[in-house]
Amino acid sequence: MSLADHFSTLGFLGAGNMAGAILKSVAGQRLIEPGDCWACDVMAEKPRALAAELGISVASSAAELFEECRSVVIATKPQDLGALLESIKGDVTRDHRIISICAGAGTKMFAAALGKGTRIVRVMPNTPALIGEGAAGVAGGAHATPDDVAAVVALFEAVGIAAEVAESDLDAITALSGSGPAYVFKTIELLEAAGIEMGLAPDLSRRFAIQTFVGASRLAAESEATPAELRARVTSKGGTTAAALEALESGGLDALFISAVKRARERSIELAAGS
Image (cartoon, rainbow, N blue to C red):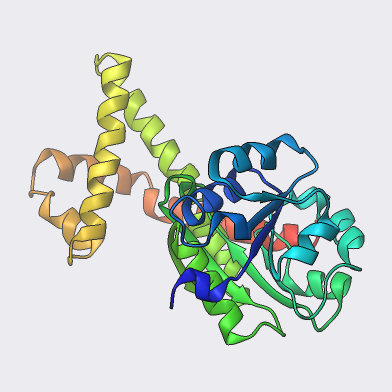
């Protein structure tokens, strides 16, 4: 089934970076006809710029967006969500499929604001979607149909990988892949700093640190071996890699890293609870 079979029209309430990335994929590749893709934003220049680039349609108001589109992605900032839901509750019907990419906002929050019968699908994407390499967890609310969830998985597969998960797992997805790019960037920073301390030029150290991650990640993605097996293949007994890994392990890296990711999950739960 093609993406256009899932979406006769697709709207975005909020036209920031993530909305733009999705639109550039689905409209830019004509997975959905550009004219059937709509965007609306309080900063009107954002959807106008996407319209000029991609040929999408621009809605002058949320009411117009919901009139034109049966599927709408809520892509606003989390701190603006409460006021937004209050403003659109008269525009949303049970015929609408609501797709939320707002971090920390559960489907029950949407149901309370928009009505218990509202079809809501919640998504936790991450920033590599901006270059088509994202990872997204997708969870349907109480009234979302299997087709709703399948459609949203297909939509986010257009900008990376996506999988259906239980909503209770989204906090873990947030900690693992939502926050995960920051862990990678931090490690690249540290590798770069180490190279500089050892006398490499900063630009050379950065290029090699980044390419090491690019190459290793592609190798992990394309190999049938597990990451642990790949690590073992480059870790000769008594060699340089073994020495480095022993230093990391003696410093407690494994436990510290897992603890950090779990702390991110705890913070996701706290934010969802409003604390």
